[in-house]
Image 1: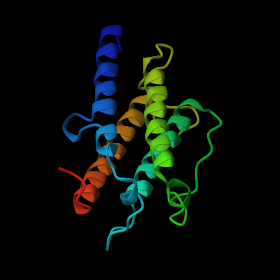
Image 2: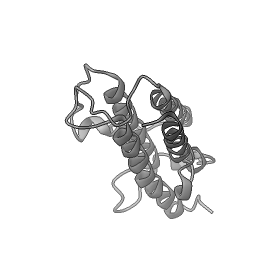
Image 3: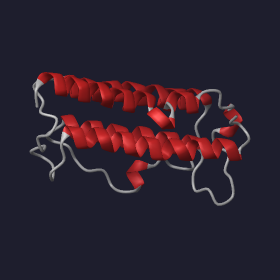
Image 4: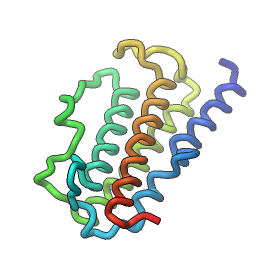
Length: 160
């Protein structure tokens, strides 16, 4: 892949991961949530706002770790990818989670910008995954759960 093509692709991936295009930005969906709604359960919804956002953080970090760590160890699915529902979060913990998502996303974007890394080359420690595939996985996973977060906020009456 030539330099100009790589630069264009990385720029598009950055916009997708940061802004979400049609889906919006995660930070916008997490803004202004009243503390008393973070752990509120609704009938037939298997997670709270806190649990959903913490799941996004855990999964995104796992993808980051896989992408940069040749000694990566697989997490136990699904238990390790969701927070303990018996451990609710306060507003400070929720804000730390949102900040960590942004931080880890930036760390991943730094990987994408590293000219020494081939976006298309399979990771030696994987089963065919490439950095490009992992970027698309983060975007897909986060946008899926972003839609759930907005729906949950609507059901709780805290979304326009």
